Length: 598
Ligand SMILES: Nc1nc2c(ncn2[C@@H]2O[C@H](COP(=O)(O)OP(=O)(O)OP(=O)(O)O)[C@@H](O)[C@H]2O)c(=O)[nH]1
Image (cartoon, rainbow, N blue to C red; front, side, top):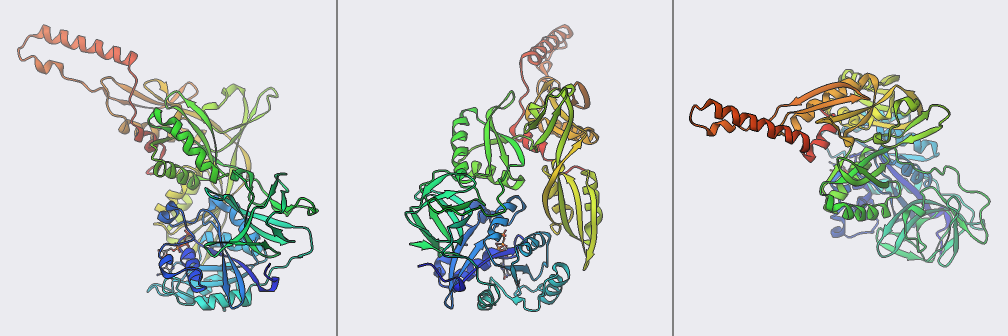
């Protein structure tokens, strides 16, 4: 039996990272009887190891709670800018949201971005001021911040401590009383939104849906309107958070289906599911295909691990359709894969999972964004994902690069260095406003200046206080060049990168200096150069290790000494000719990290 509309409440929790979203979610589950104390001991919603360790939520999950005769569907949303589209779909499946703000930290940029999204979805927002147990908590100040900065009435904000269990019943009551019931037509053709999907080894691909109109049942023939594919529903159910099978889901309900689907790539978030025999007239609005924005090469340190890497990447991809990969070969690194990610955090997560879960030693090449290259003589436009594939400069008419609009939120005292950072990264200031001792900065920045280490720099400059959120705004022409790094006169393609001409020299110098420290001395002299085309823009030399062969000659026989030295010189020459430089693996990663620049 489907739940009557007026008994359903669908809500999400919006919060800045670390403000307590997962803790609160667990507490709500515990209070409504979903789990025993023992089961509670592990945080339930963040179910991947890495999520737990980093304390961030990656995949959206949903839990059905029962409270005073109502069914409350809690949608957990990812907490990082890289996963903004998933957040937007989860929000589209709700009528309201809990806005969790840390009573000691106050409102942060991420909170703002998500709140505005939530407001755009016409959500009823219930502010929750969390962590009131902390000695540094200032609930009244935070209440004013919510009103001043976000413009929400916070007089009814619930004061809570997810950790100590304060305010939990009030939050549940507020959800029932203040968040509206969903609307929908049970007699209309089926229309359901695909919110999320993941691969389960026993069930196959599990699809999380929100039914808008009509009913979905086991045995029903369904169609994905954007993908154009058809499937047979073989299970319908919900999570409490343990899996529970149901016979059907009706309008306003949130739950899962399985339909013997093998790969998540067939189930795009935001797609509309309808009935094959009686289809809906049109798909739901807002569907967007997510595209990777950051690319890099992943190579096994040990060439024998290539097959293992291929297998592991394929397995990860089963569960994450937003990441892409194709084979790549590099003169320096051998066989590997060119991979695409939603952002740097996404890249780090995949890299870490490969290292940890699959026990692989990897080399990551310089992350790159996607450039649009316009070729001369009507050669058309190509998309460049890999600096190694850059066409000859005289075949290039112009290059366009992606730009973003970033919102940075920072306490006053760190504003100066942050303005400088943005300026150094070719940023264009759009807005600067002050609210209660904090600055809200809006900057336009080229994405390629952000992907390296912008976020890390921002955090270190502001001692962790700055927060950052961005979205892509489009492509603009840029004076960009490919900078190659030559070690012992051989280009190391894994280290080549596309940079703005004005920044090339500084970056090249920095890279050479770093490599000089990172590459151990050899028996011969090693030049390290940064070059644009044939022009060297920076150079360092690693001095040769001089094995003192004459030390063995005790006597003062000068001729013998000279002979030996000459022999040694010859040996060196041969080495320079045949031998190649051993670059330690750490050097690749360390050289790419621009961290302690400037
Ligand atoms: N003192 C105190 N600490 C809390 C409270 N709620 C959460 N915390 C702690 O704050 C930290 C972050 O909490 P999480 O629930 O993981 O934060 P989150 O918002 O889910 O973080 P993301 O998953 O990254 O979005 C954890 O160390 C929690 O134990 C609270 O009410 N009081």
